[in-house]
Length: 281
Image (cartoon, rainbow, N blue to C red; front, side):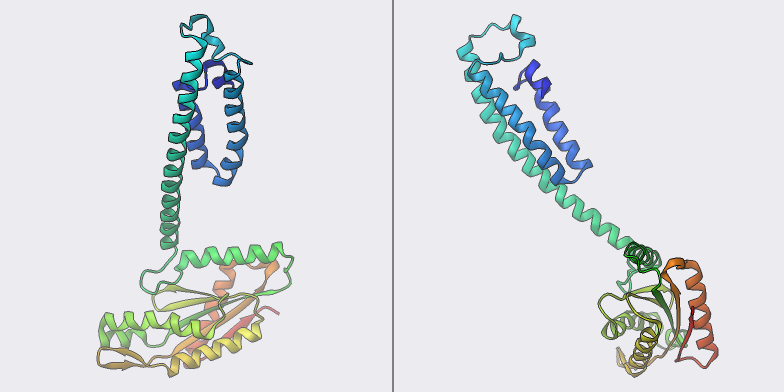
């Protein structure tokens, strides 16, 4: 604002500095911060202009010795420039804010796509890892360190035979249906994602190991009983589940995945289409 006082509110330098500061702030900070930060600046700006019009303070004192216009004409130009710059400034701010909002929505959408598996539209391995860490951090901040965090892996049994018999399109149809079956048997806060290939991961939120075991058994039965329509065929498939749980206070993601994978291997070795667990006591 000192630039506006010494050089004049309506000079090109003042305009560029003011508009540039606002636009730069919108890019770097939350819009609410810039909004509340701009208000006192505008009060000073228009207050200074009013004081100038009332001849209480001089306009552009740096250039006063070189001013050849009358005070009346200077005030006339100041009023017109204030009105014009206000209208143009408001329009530019609205347009820039609209453009910035759309750009931020686009960027957020792109970030979400990075974390999604394109086939099943569920979280991919990276997205699952981020969600796991977020959940652990939330529980630690809430002081829930002695609670379990439960993790499950499911692997579709004999999935290669499905691909061999119905082709990869048939296999893709099966993969797309599995998350839908799971979602019908899980709560909204439970997290589902494709871990890789025909493996899916479930992260249980606020669930004890015993309840998670019961939920997985319900999911297993639902998958077994479901018939997946593809072309003129009905594909039936089963899944093996591994479940593991660790206390929040030392919930290491890598260790939990290893233990869950070991439980899944046990389920495969036990004849498939069953649920096995490895729970920290």
